Length: 300
Length: 278
Image (cartoon, rainbow over all chains, first blue to last red; front, side):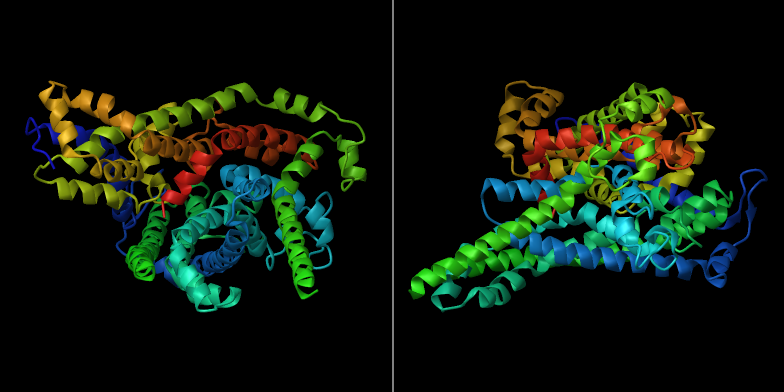
């Protein structure tokens, strides 16, 4: 740490960043909290209603429904990403051109826009013109996207396809962090492949798993693009996830107070999830230090 | 004998795994290929033989239709200008902020750091309503400013630069000060070149995210003039009547090609940027 040459320097250096962040992130959050206490349709002046917006969201069951739908979608996405990401990382954790090519293929979906991927799969899932839609006619005669029972799962499947590459890359980094000495020690003890996986890889990867799980949970809680392009919240509101519900309140119903209340509830949930992620991250740093210690012990 | 059969079963295992991995690659690359092939089909083929893998003849009609119905060049330019401006602004601001937080002792530095980190918790989906109202009061909705300014500062980038600067020795900065270098020279001429890997990561993450972004341009624009490519392509489908999949897929090829090109070009850096965040 250095003494600034001039007492004003540090403040001048950080001011532009803080100004942008306060104006576009912190103040808007405060405004949303304040406006959530008003009834407001943009045309007439806002009217103070206290906690009524929150009460309506809970009474009408809208909050519970949005939570249920978002959770259903998120659980499928997180489970899919964890399992596929881990399996792919284990299979692809070695050098070689072919392996690199497979890694790049899977990860490429993460780089392409949500709009591209969503449009591509709307077509693929179309009951008449789509490759997958035709194949799935047995379980979804009108296409998975037009039935309230299957639409949310179709969205989750597309999301898994899109972000598994991310999970895979993070798992690969986690695998690289495991000290080789631990495997050597296990091999000296006569441990086979399975035993090495269960006794070394799996416990050492637990923090990575927690990180991938929580970050894909947060990403799927914020889902919007895929819903907007593929189902617009339908059919029969069966894909009305949080952000899409907020969007509809603002741009279709012009209920800004109600939207703000839903935003605040959504934000509270995100804070809980971030708390989880922070816990996972702490677990990670603790584990990594322990791993280094264990590696050193195995060497000694 | 036993050794030979062990070798054979291992060989079968290796080939089995390779076959499975080949299927994995096909699962991810297949849809793109299907999209490209579909974009060369004609409407007639879509109606009568939608599952034929190859188009009867490679038609450019769908692409012609895309260029006729939307100003593709304009939208690609908008997307690029927006994403580049955001990335440039972020890099310019992130350096002094990260330097102050990592290297300078001042009252309130802890508070400033916590404020920056707190912004990581607030996604655009939470702020868009008040920001939209504020920008419309300033008559900035439907301008490039509404797309760029809200992302001018990057909390993640500030954190990344601060972390990277923590490992730069203070003596180096002291020596530069002795030589009479100004603080701005130290930040942009001395430290920035040392931070190139971090800045490349930030640039790629930011550029790819904003080039692809759909949510923010959707809620901040109603006007064709400042629309970005993802928005235009999504709208093209909404406006389409009936089955015009060949046109939608042609526009989708145009939309995804630049992202895939960036990926092919900067694959190693992008993978490192993503892996380093955990």
